Amino acid sequence: MKNKKIIFIFIAMTAFLFLCSVKSNATLELNELDFEAQINEDGSINVTETWNIYISETNTLFKTFKKDSSKYSGITDVTVKDLTADKELSKINEEMYHVTKDCYYALTNSKGMFEIAWGVGLDDDYDTRRYQISYKVQDAIAKYDDYSELYWQFIGEDFEIDAKKITGTILLPMNAENKEEIRVWGHTQQLNGEIYATANNKIEFTINRYSSGNYVEVRTLIPNYMITSSNRTYSGNILNSVIEEETKWADEANARRNAQKVAIYSVIVILSIITLYFITKIFKNIKKLKSLDSKIQPTTKLEYFRELPYKDATPAEALFVLTSGMNKSFSSSFSANILDLCLRKYISLELVENTGIMKSDIVKITLENKDVEDLKEDEKLTLDFLKEVAGNNESLTTKDITKYLEKHTSKVEKLDKKIEKIIEKEEVSNGNYIKEKQEELINYETICIIYTVMAFVTLIFIPLAIVLGINAIIVGMMAYKTNAFTQKGVDEKEQWKAFKKYMEDFSLLKDKEIPSLVVWEKYLVFATAFGISEKVLKQLKVVYPEITNMDSAMYTYSYIHIMNSVNIGNCINSSVYSAIGSSGSGAGGGFSGGGGGGRWPEVAVADAKTN
Image 1: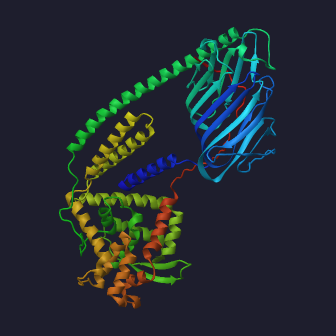
Image 2 (image 1 turned 60 degrees about the vertical axis):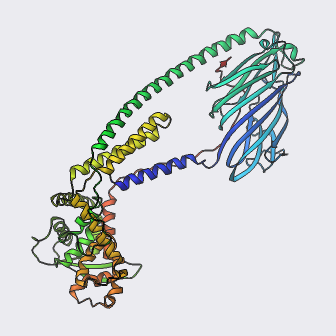
Image 3 (image 1 turned 90 degrees about the vertical axis):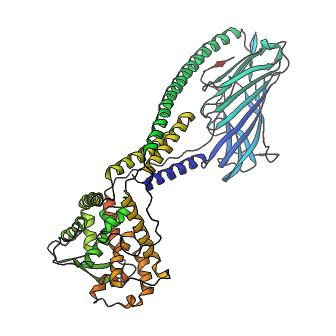
């Protein structure tokens, strides 16, 4: 778990939070939904709904009513206005899936429900709009011997639009003699609303943070003298039965509220205890941070270094030190090792086919019969690998290597791990690297990531998220201060870094004491390991123009000639990376999709809140 991985995870989480904060396609969200219902003396009600709504990539808004003659006889006098543009929408008499912009209809739809729908014209755009929907509900009031009842569901449980706030006002036909004559109850599954008779002729209700899929309904009993006539008139008294029913629902609602409070308080207590625990971890981590040595800095800062920092270094060792232990594998230095083996005459290279841009270049590798005692372990393993690919033959090609890698991925992976261990051991022996410190560094990095993820997950409880975030920062600082490389290793890294920069810039330097081509053959080995061989070769052509027309028979510079014709690093390493990566596991997820739109059924499941 390396520093680059941590950076990647932080970027990924930042991108994730950003994406979560951006509204998705086809989004509907009500900033506020306000109802005003005027009860009339003839038992009807005039309802005006004001929608303050954010709309994204949506063509049509609509509202439906379940037809039920036992609750009301019909809906008439429908109008829809665009308050944002200050205009009334045009009425049409045809049901449409996508309603024409600035038009609306109010009719019985194909499903047998009364539907009001209007076109907003935001198919490929987004905006915040205010709409006003007005309609008259005939015979909404049921009149009994003692009271008249309004039992109306303003929002049904199939409503699919969230709302930050819902407000409502119900106006009575006249003033009651006193407010006590007005009985009111509000029902919602979320139990988060309030309803009161605020005046002798007014009832008001409020709901904050409404979640879609929850109904909102109001039940009120008003004095009979306010209603002169109603087509829904029944004999008998209603007050006692309503109070009994509402009391039962209220008790059930209060029990649910109490259970929710207990659960919330329990969670808060648990999270508080966890927060206190991680507060103690802050102090422990600060103490640990102070006990760590400072981050080791190079003894001397270098801009350029004109010779190999460590003359007997293998490409894998150089790459390991240059990248602070991040690249130490077979796949990272394989091509450079081949060039080094060629330079040291354990193998020879020959370009046998150059088939152009659309086809692969093929390099022939001939194995030389030479004692391997002078080779280091990682180079011996590379040479053994080539011999294994060649089999009984004295030579092989890059094409043979590609085929072998495709068929023996598990062997390549084992070789990769073996090289890693050898390089680590060698750098420990060189006094550059402390494996135990590297393990400690990985541990800190892992803990830092865990703290960071936990902080995001617990954002619902801000104190804990803050404490976890502080711990993540402190442990991250601990990881930064942990020195897996010794002073010797840090100084050697500085030299390799300056050496790499020298190879990248040498043709531009005023000092023209450029090493000979013989020396550059060795340098190109490390340029290949560092991934800058093409850039270095271009500069060599500026300083040594004869490279362009070099005779392939000149053995001393044989692979400079080959590299002038083909990028041997890309030719081989692409196959190695492909083979090592091919056996890794992957995970995927399925696609999901959804649509929007709300329905407001008039009949609701009985679940009450009373005041």
